[in-house]
View 1 (cartoon, helix red, strand yellow):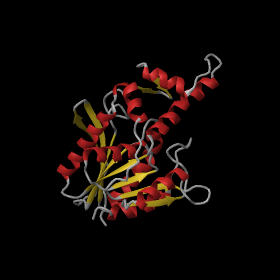
View 2: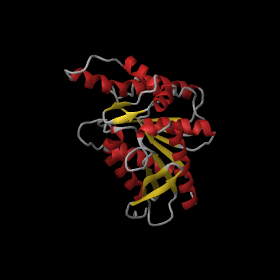
View 3: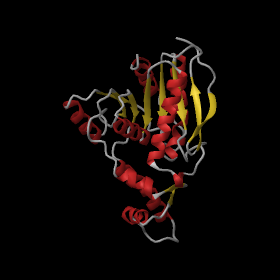
View 4: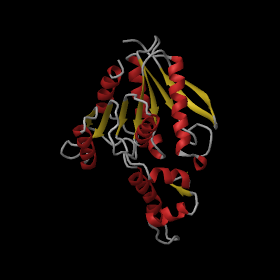
Length: 273
């Protein structure tokens, strides 16, 4: 075990502006490195503390982590209203290339929520076999989009000055080329179209450590169980880890999840060796 260096903030030049990054690394050459793929919208902000705690724990254990804000998100340049799903693919290329150039060690992807779906879609399209650690992954983009659109529906119900709307009405607006403001985030038709057609069904041919919040009976959600059982029955190298705690990516107050941190650190230190 070695001590970590201080978190190093910097910008990476991309094809469309700069990407804000924070590198968490040990003082010595790391044994492995992870590129963190963040969630979408407010979930990214709610998760920053947990991500920082995890990255620091890994740096203490000799592992490097690159935390990058994607195009149009956080402190990176660009506007979300101009973002395309393919632009985020390019950002993952950029981050992985930078890590591989800087550190002579194995590299993997660590995704949270929609970031997990982005990581799986990226690897599937690229045909690249990199280990993945997924925190509470989204695996159906259409379902995620519906849940996000419901924020606008809820806001309209709370307002006395707007007529009632539905998620279907919002989808139609997007199909007509309208940019929708939802919870302070501008969703463009191209990004929504990409999400609406993303559903990871086929098991990926790469090692996956899937971390899922325990349900009332100590089990993950039924949809997750069905998908993973289908993958495992087909020989996919996926391992489910259930953790106890709060859904920190959506709680009103910033929340820690020590159980997830402990389990993830144990797996991420060793899975790339």
